[in-house]
Image 1 (cartoon, rainbow, N blue to C red):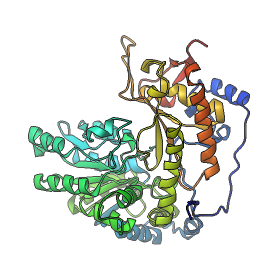
Image 2: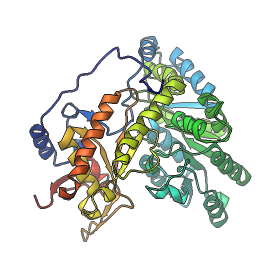
Image 3: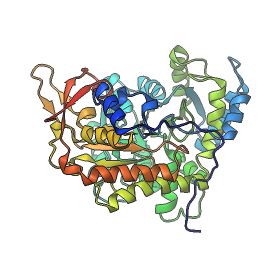
Image 4: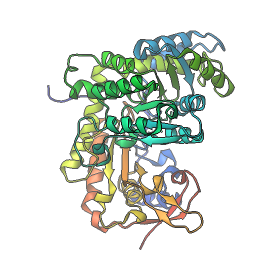
Length: 459
Ligand code: F0G
């Protein structure tokens, strides 16, 4: 059979409330054209994030009921720890309430002012947690990773030559750890190859620098390796994931992605002395080491979810359905980050609306049009999120790229939902020359995208 189906049937449904264009126009205005300020019930298809938005399986719900809420040494903790050991292989595991809590504990333990942390591309919370310690976060993705239209099977790879040059320039003592984000979220959900992990690991080991994996989307990355890298077609995603982690000294993970859970995270390491320091911080702000920031039922849901994320039928459907969206819009001419990523499609809004200059926020304009047209909620990753406003002069600087991310929640939407999204994007594409830009009318000094309000320029 050529048709690839969703490898699940639906047991419990959550209604989507349909709305008229007129109603959406009113909601959008009331929200100051910022889709973060909409109520979820006013959204038809929510592609804001793939984080914490997964549909749990019947096995996970059964696991929730098995959750043991003992304060110390609960059964849930041992099931969680065993699942993490079986997949990741690291000796010490610390449970956290989500990914950024693991980041905060790791960087607070290892980083000091004057340090530099290389990564293929830091996710924004990862960067913020590195910088909070006074260290500098440095992105070293390969050059193809910065060109939306460039095709490369592993566009998330780290530029090993630049890493080598960085180590030679600043010295090993100033690099407390190196990180690889799989898949590279901020770079378009692009995978890292096993050859690249091996090369980065060899260089780090030779220099005495610990290598950590930001493992949020490790299962999707493993599947890309199976599909695209020589020698891996016959291996299971679990075997590939185990090999990948064997080259590293530890990892951080938000279980809200490939943990298939609605909350949770973890920090893992092979370094006993480090683990014991980290455990002290964990107790201070997350909780006792056998539950961290989670309820027993969360630990159980993740223990099951981590294994489900590695299921080949699921991964085939997952990667195929994201690619389906990307191909259907790019075939019609819509400019996207190529090739389609694992968890999301990124539209190049600057190329979509060439008439709208970066400082008139083309990504924001596209996000507003998708909501107006069809009630779809996407997220701007461009000047609204990463541009800067000088507080004294009010002068604005644009971001490097103007992208709009359509992130696909796991196991939530069917092909007809995705067909609806394709139709909406193509409708906006047809009338793209009529769309105008936006300006800020209110913005906070930090993380302005969450709360800013806008108005349309010229109407
Ligand atoms: N690392 C990566 C690569 C991420 O994508 C995220 C979250 C985190 C770390 C932090 O994890 O949210 O559990 O604290 N990404 C979400 C997103 C928010 O929408 O891409 P967290």
